[in-house]
Length: 538
Image 1 (cartoon, rainbow, N blue to C red):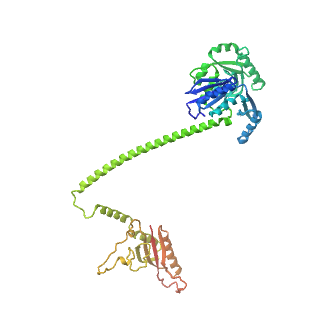
Image 2 (cartoon, rainbow, N blue to C red):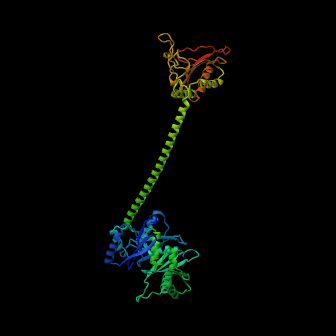
Image 3 (cartoon, rainbow, N blue to C red):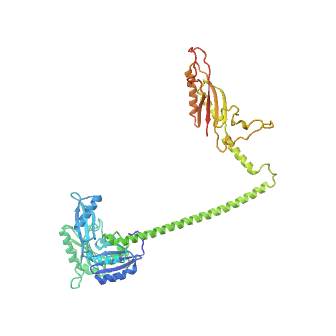
């Protein structure tokens, strides 16, 4: 709840005497109004609350009708454990929706069960008229708190817990609802009791007598063992401390400690000390705003609506701020880009002027500048991408080094994928198209321009190398001839980007061809010719 930043809050102190309305604003409390129980008081409360509209509200209940039960339950985790607590809580307090179960650790002995404190506001009729009035006005009710449970925050604020502090602590405070005594064991609330602060004659009750009764109850209920000292801490205005010191004398099992209200208010961060502990508890509630002690159910739906609305507003503000920052960055970038563009335009104009001034005294060139630039670009492309047979010849040479029995007869290198390799009139290194060369109509030679794609513009062109070779085996053996040719073809095919096709094998293995020879191994071997087509693609 603390994550939502609001300008002001309504804090309502509820007791059997009625409802007190306080306003929390800027970290300070101010009392607004008091309303008596009954129909007239509720109507006055509605009239008071209506102008405040959507101001979040928190109720601090300080009632006699608050019960505490300490139980040991089996240690069960997960959903089963939650269901066990819910069933036990339902069995203990059937008549009220304002109930709570708090696990306070585990037992030291036996099966180490969970130590559970069950608490409830046993008379919901004291609260419902006020909560129904808030629901009628759609006021966002954010939480229902117990004055006794909020005493835990007071113990923490006053630094009364710890190994070097009070293990068995009885915190005694005088409030509008009466005299409240809350018992803490190692900083955890175990029991709380609210009694009238004045007797039937209107005189203040004897605090020492009430502390003795509470100590006797704690001993009989085995919350406090016999012989264990109890530290009673009394919180009161400084003017009442002397009278309390006369009443409360240390005994063998009881030690009294007194804290002035001014000191407590200072530790809580209050500017002025309140007369009663109500203001101190309300200040702690407004400053911390912890999770609700008791569930509200449907009574808290307008608070959930309010939180969603505030979250949407906050998200919208963040989105608007992000958009503003993004727009500012874009505007700054646009200004920077515009400035850089203007500077570049000035530099371009200056360089153009310098170029014209440098070119003015020079004689006119035979070709325009654009043509010269294009020629340089073409020259660079030709130097980088023009087809050359050197790479294919290098690959062929390395393969022949591993096949000394094979000799080259002829090589035919062409640019292209080999589609025109069968044309006998093709010119090596050029497309096999006879229309590109030959005499014209008047008998003069005519040359057709070579397509740029065959020169490597805009990308490298495919190259074809027709290899005519012969195998010269050491002995007459057809298997050696075929193996030598196949080995050369396989070595070449392993080169990246190079494909190999056998145009004419060394031996014609077709079924219709007659294969003849002699088995005389001493007869000199005859060469066998074959043709390979190599195609290299970029």
